[in-house]
Image 1 (tube, rainbow, N blue to C red):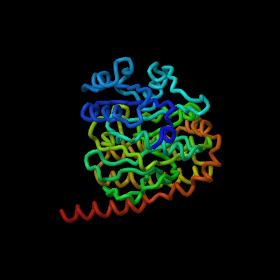
Image 2 (cartoon, one colour):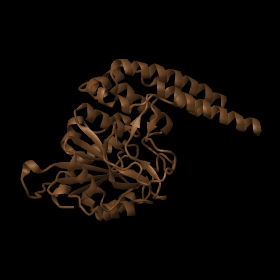
Image 3 (cartoon, one colour):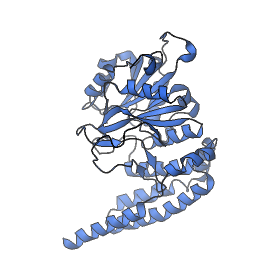
Length: 363
């Protein structure tokens, strides 16, 4: 690729947030340092790790680029402080006309390893779609690198995270091709820094889970497109989602994830679809709570009940969230409605209940 096609004059700031990530950080840090299109700045946050994550970050990127925060710090808060850090705002003169340069934020988790040309491919995709402001890579499994995890994201009206993939689906190029999507994951997300600032970054109240979907939806409401660039690849452990470490920012991960999913819907949908989604999720949450109680899982039942009640049960907080997301909401929904499928959770819950009861009877 020519230098022009990969935004050679642009400024990219990589932001890495680590939390007990020593098992994966060496490969993640090496991958950032080995990019075919180098980043100009790196700033890294260690959120109270109990392993060697902080010292590993300092060794890889220098102490001036690394700082620590409390163990319970949410992801959005950590990223926001990182972008205010001196290391993320040093003056750089890449050359070329100023009006042709763009500043970018590249978000990376401590458990994700970008392929050597990931940034180069993301910037090439950005060059091809100047109306877009947020880009995401294709995400594959860290251990089994033929397994495809994501190629763009959405959410259904029951709050379920939708990838459009089968479990452990092998990547044979069947989902290749750059395209607009509702959202992309924060693991490898590239966003224009002016748009990040204009939209307000990740919602700090979400702490952990779904903040990427919410941000991308708000970016769309602000008039920008979100695209997946499938030539860019990132390998991801998904350590928090797979319970490979304690997500200290969310003491009750299931409850936090369900609450945030409902907030994404309740905050970003226009009034009538929002009310419909809340009613549908009331029925669904009631059925889930009853099922968990029958299955003798009182903790899961309580998480489901509290997560739902925490959204309509706090009307002033919900109204504030909706006011913050009001600009462009209806126009965005008119474009995105087809990307927000009806929930299939009723059928999935029934199938799960039948399978569970069948196993109980056979036992």
